[in-house]
Length: 248
Ligand SMILES: Nc1ncnc2c1ncn2[C@@H]1O[C@H](COP(=O)(O)OP(=O)(O)OP(=O)(O)O)[C@@H](O)[C@H]1O
Image 1: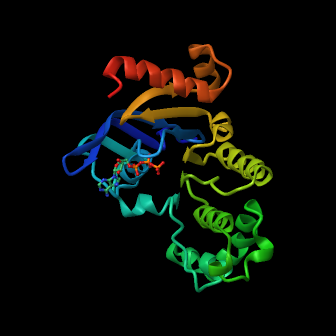
Image 2: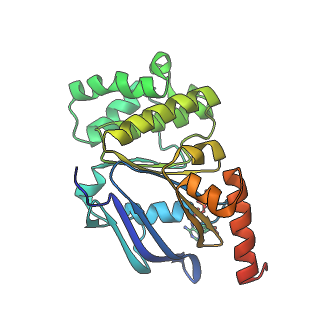
């Protein structure tokens, strides 16, 4: 297996206009590893993802994906990306959406057809693929977006809140599949508010007020903070940060 990390972020500072949103962020996602990014609303998770995808250039520090500085068109083709807002064609069916996004990846119609059953089964969407997306529920749209991100056998999956609106049973099924993909060498970075998701990851990065407040394997963090729940790690690390920075 290639030992170059899938993602390397080093000393990243990022912001909009005069506002600094992220400070001194370091992270490494090795090949085949799953990293969950946790933080309250507005803490900068999507900003970090946009920086990794090359949609925002680093203000300070560096971002490398598959050993390449972003943005890079070739590397983008190796990333399966699921944005927070579903970017789907409402007037097309689920199947037509998959065909369209597959064609953007230079997959032939028959290649998309071959992969369609597999990606649709991961998110349990097979029976609804012939329905128009405008008639989908919010959770079905998330599932279709996830299926689209899996097309083309990506080396890296970047998933912004993939489990929103997905029931616990299907979430377990999706996690089984994500672990299988990771075991096959796919690296995965996802954001979540759901602590059950966090427990499934190999590595956690907790951000709050633009900074990393805790980073490590779930079990390691539970031991370090002497707590039983990941949520309590976040709370304790947040208190430490408030004590350091002041709570204003
Ligand atoms: N295009 C933009 N221009 C100006 N400020 C922005 C822009 N996008 C995000 N921000 C600000 O940057 C901060 C971080 O936003 P970001 O979307 O990265 O947070 P998040 O952790 O992903 O939040 P959520 O969990 O709600 O999606 C917020 O204060 C937000 O208002």
